[in-house]
Image (cartoon, rainbow, N blue to C red; front, side, top):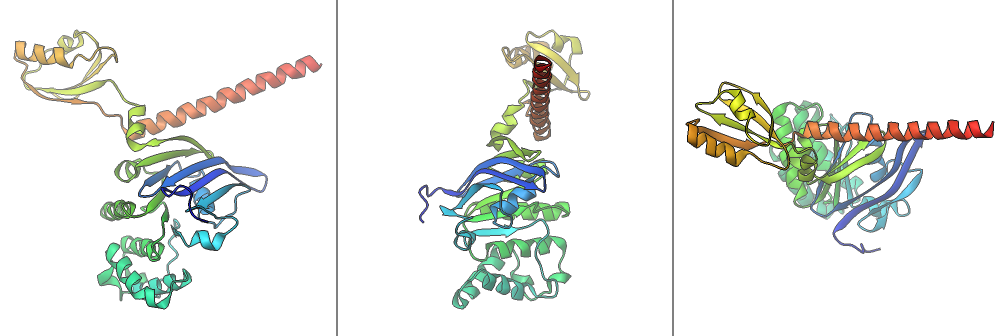
Length: 334
C-alpha cells in the first residue's frame, strides 16, 4: 500500500500498553516526517523504551495502530519492518565477530540480496566512520565505536525510519559529540526518532520534541519553541564602569537586578517594557561603558521542569476534583 502522505514516514495512533494489570502507555499518538529528527524526552521510567519497542514491532500494543511509510505494522509486519532500522539501548552485538562479518550478517537478516550487500556494507562503514575498523573484532572496540557498529546495523538496508533508544548512554564526552554528529547526518537522509533523558541531546540534535511522563505524551513542539515556552524577560549586561546597583534597579520596567560579577549584571524586566534602550542611553550619558548586552535564553532544563511540573499539578488537580465529586455522590446516595 503506497503512502498517502509521502512526507510522513511513521504514524502512531492512540497506542496503549499494560504489563499485567498495570497500564504503562496511555493513548500515545505521534507522527514523523521525512528528514526529521524527533526527540522522545523523559525521565528514566517514563515509558520511552516501551514506546520504542512498539514502534519497531518488537512489542505489540494492546490497542492503537502504527503505519510505517503507509504500511500497517500490525497487519503487515514483514513489509513494514523492511523500512525500519532499530538500535535498542543495549546494541545487539556479537563481540566475537569482526565488524565486517557482523554487518554482513545483519544485512542478510534484513533479507538483502547477496549482490547488494558489498555496496551497502561499504556505505554503512563509511557513514559510521568504521572503514578502518572493518576487520577488528567488535569486542576489542571502545564503547563509542561499538555504538557506531550498532548504528551501522540499523542503517545498512537504507531504511526510511531509524529508531535509536538512548544512543549516547554510557559514552564519554568525546564519544557523545561524535555520535550526535553522526545522528545529525543521518537526519538529512532518513527520519530519526531517538529517546533520551538528556536535555542537551534534544537541543543539539532534534528538530522536534515530544515529552513523555508516566506513559503519556504531555508536550510536543519544535526544539526552538520548547525553549520559548519558558522564555524569561531579561538580559545580561556587562559595564566596564558600572554604577551602583540601585541605578539599574531604578530604570523603568526593571523588576530585579542580580550582580553576577564585578562588571556583569542579570536584569529582569516586565514583558510590557524592555528597558534596554533606556539602559543604553544612561550608559552613554554617565560613562558606564557598555561592553555587552545579551537577551536571556530559557535553559532547556528549566523548560523541562516547568512543563513536567505543570502537568503533575494538572493531574493532581484532576484527581482532587474526582475525589471530591466521588465523596459528594457518596454523600447524596446516603
